[in-house]
Structures are given as structure tokens and as C-alpha cells.
Image 1 (cartoon, rainbow, N blue to C red):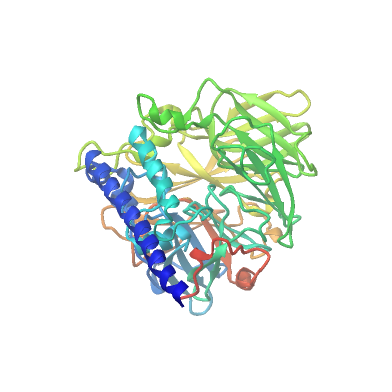
Image 2: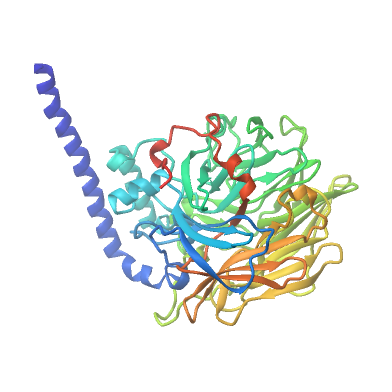
Length: 574
């Protein structure tokens, strides 16, 4: 008893000291915020204005009304769209990649009495949970890491972990899980961001999503993973990769990149460290063919020293003097010794459409830009009366659909434009059952040439003839998101054509502030259905669809999949 009486005051004093140190860090951040004029900057940040602004709340389920057309009978499931929505006001600068993952869901029920039910939920990551409780940022974000002040913010972030401020502890996941939502039937529904392992989600019958925990496949995949894994429709495999900014990632054999394969039973079949990548670069997407897994090593470099240099002071910069490289890893490889690399003039690819082999050539259809500038996702308006800052002002940053040809016999490589018009396009989509093999049709989201980063519609492309064969254009004041392709058949392997399906996305009317879910027939490119959404759905990133017949597979517990190390972010259905 005496020992307890002596120990408790010391413990209380230690806890008090830690809390005090956390409040001291808060005070220093407040001074930094005042000195840098951060509140004024936030008011001008294009990605905190208009329909990019966060909603910071969870809503639904709520019934929605079909206002045009009719819900197609083939659509019985949940449309999901994820994007950044910061749960607390940033204290540093804000980058669009920084927002916490907010999942918007529309349950579509076809039949005699069709229904549409809207809801939204945050991915319950440790960051969301802890920052909501603290009512302030606790984790260092991309927008914090700008210039010499950014160095100080990084140090303050490390200090918070050092004193274990408000639940922070070494090893806790800082991911935002805001980039993509993907279904691997053997692993579940995954909310992804390339900074860490994904989070596993489940669905209620009414379509409301909720978080289970971080997916680590029994601890086999605990490091960073791409937000864009690729799926083999024939074997049921999921191919993914992760990249790191240093060579200290556990289990990676001092490599900066690691490839992983999850089989049709949800088990990690193999991991392959890739030693051919020698600099820390942003590797956002990949591709998969029948024979190869494709990695892209573009010169978008991570270098913290850039924060101390004159100019923007942003630690991620495009280096035009460095080549762009494509690596082909044989799918049966157990190491990277047989990986073949190809070099091209510097360019950037954020997203691939599809890839396949033709004889000795590997063809990769992707959205290619001569350059890239991630600072644009922090742009400020010049005039407070202006809603959004101009985007794509530098023509070199405008992506165009191209085909990258890699000749495995000669080692030569080339990039050729696909569309006959110089559309600004990205967020490509195609029929999932044709992945890895030749396909005729693909779909790319089209951006406005002037104004903010606003999507004006979708282009249907004939990949054999290299031309646009159809287009959807939203109304004058209406803008949308990635146009998701959803197969008409619940079993996509039974598709009769690679354009047999639907295209859908949320849209926002800037004049009326009304949001919709729009559904188009992918074969005819005609509007099938327009559903009024009762709440604003901010412009976001990627989308997914889960058929009702897949709900049971999504919701089956998988003890081997869900890790417990980061259970701070776990949530139950509500």
C-alpha cells in the first residue's frame, strides 16, 4: 500500500508533465500559425473552398429521389466514393492529399420498388480518432512540410510522439486512408492510401460503411502499400507494391520498393523486394499483364533538403534531367534478378488504364504528362472573390492518354498519344474482367481547360483505333469526379463486351449547390439515371462498387487479415 501511495503521485506528476509538454507544443504551433499568416492562407486555399471544402460530419442513411430516368435493374449494390475531408482545421498549410478519408455511399436497390439510400462515414483511422478527440491536428502532414518553418513543424510533430501527446505512440499509423476504395473478394473492402497499409471496411445492408481495422494480412504486410493494387480476374490474385523514403523498412531487405501478391484465398503468396529503384520517388500506380507486373520509376523525387532551399521549399519535386523508367517483373519471379528496365525521357504517370502483351511488346495505356507539380494541390486564389485557383496553367503538367510500348526483345521504348484531340484526362477506368489482356474500350475522366481542378465529363476511347468514340459532358455549372465503370453483369467474367456496363459519379452544380449521382450507359454513353443527393459531396478521389451479392464476402471476419497493432482506429457499426 505504501509503495502505491508513493508511486501514484510520481505517476500523476509524470502524466502532468507530459500533458504540459503537449500544451507547450500547441502554443509553439499557435505562434507559428500567427507568424506565417496561416489562417489567411487557409481562407485562400483553393482546396478548402467551394465544393473542395470539407463537410466534417457523418450523415445518413437517407432516402434519395430519382429525378431523371430510372435506376437500371442490373444495379443492386453500393456505389462508394472516397476523398479527403480534414476532420480538424489545419494549423499548417493544407495540401489536398492531407484530408482524412471520408467515404460517401449510395445504396442502389433495383426491382419493383427501387430505392437509393445515401450515407457517409469517415474511415476510422487512428489519426481521425485522436484528432477528433484533441480537436486539433496532432500528426505532421504534407502541407506542413514547406520551407524552413516546415522543418520546425516536422520537429514539433516528432516531439509530440516523444512525449506521447494525447495518445500518440511510436509505430501508430498516421495514414489518412483517403485515396481509393477497392474490393478483393478474398481480403475484403479496402480503403487505401499509399503511405501505409489499408483499412478494412464493412457494409450494412442499407449501404452504410464502417471501419473494422487496419488490414495487414496477419502481419505479413505492415508497411506502405499502393492505393492502386491490380487484380487478376483469372487467378483471383491481388498484386500490390509499396515504396519507402529510406532503406530501413522492416522486411524489405534494404530495398526502397517491395512487391506483394495476395492469392485468391486472402493469403500473402510472396513478397519481392525491388533493388533496382535507387532513389526515393513517388510511385502512385502500377499495371498488370498476363505475364508481368509493371512498376513505374518516374522522377518525382522525395528530398527533405529541398525544404531549406530558396523557392517553394517543397520536399517533393519533379527532376526533368532524370529519365522515366518502366520495370517488368515476371509474374512467376521470386526475386528481382530477372526484372527488365526501360528508359524514356522524363515524364509522369499518376494512373494507368490497362496493359497487355503483343508478341515481344508490352503495351501500357496510361495518362502521361511531361512534368508534374504537386504544389499545385496547395494553390491559393489571387482574389478572395475567386472561387478556385487556376489549374493546369503549365501545359507540361496536363495529362494525356498515351500508350507506352516496351520491346522486351530489343530493350527499346516509346510513348505515343492515343486520342486524336489533346484532351486533359486522367482517372482512367476499364472493364475489370479484361485486365491484363487486350481490350477495345477504355474510359477517361476529362478535366476543364480553364478554372480550378474541375471535371467536365468522360471520354470513351477505342484503344484499337486510337480515337474517341463517345463523350459525356456535364452541364455548364456541373462538375463531377472519377467516372467509375461498373460491369452490367455481377460476375464480370461473363461479360459479353468490354463496354457492357455503366459509368457513374457524384456531381455538384456550382450554381444551385445541388449534388447528384449520375449513371450513364457505357455502351451508348446516354444518361440512364440522375439521383438527387441530399448533402454536399466534396470533390474527391477514387470510386468503387460492391454488388449486393458480394456483401456477405465483404463482411466475413478474417482474423488473418485484420491487424490489431493499430486498433485505436477500429469502429463498430453504428
